[in-house]
Image (cartoon, rainbow over all chains, first blue to last red; front, side, top):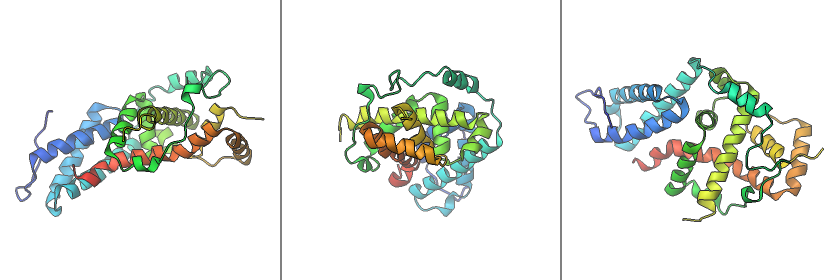
Length: 201
Length: 64
């Protein structure tokens, strides 16, 4: 991975290997929400630089990493609020919805297809404490259409309100509701298929 | 009027973003009371948000 030079006060002995490791995680996180590699690179770069400037206040890498993530979340929220992005996919969304096409999980009457029926999940809370579960959830997120993943993260992680997401993406609240519904349907189905059905734990 | 599963899950999803009207809540309850698949869907919805937050904060726990 290309690693640009890190600004680093001489008083702060921060391990470059640590920065490299953290950077990959941060980039994945930022890309999902910004939907753009360049902007994600910039946001991560700024967050790292800001964090390392004050890095000597932190004891241990875990604390430093938490701090970098907090800065990055703020940067992403700012970017999303300020930036007026091209309403990419808005027209696609609208036409898809007006066409009345139902997600493939449902039959033509809007009832669950047999294979897609949500089953009861055994001890779903346990998954939240499992690295393996979160890795699968991550893979499911990455499999979503870019816009769905972006809106889902803006809503559930950055916790923007619907109207903030609308302003940001140039979509209507109706669009957002449809996008979130589809993202949740897809994520739920993906988890059922890859985690709860196989019980890999 | 009875909702189908698609419309029911759509309302369940929207409930995380907005307050549903009285009539929407009634229709949702009526359907979910009889359809365990949609009832399962509703129970599992919050987990998706939780998982996303855990994933975003995962580094905090491990110090990876």
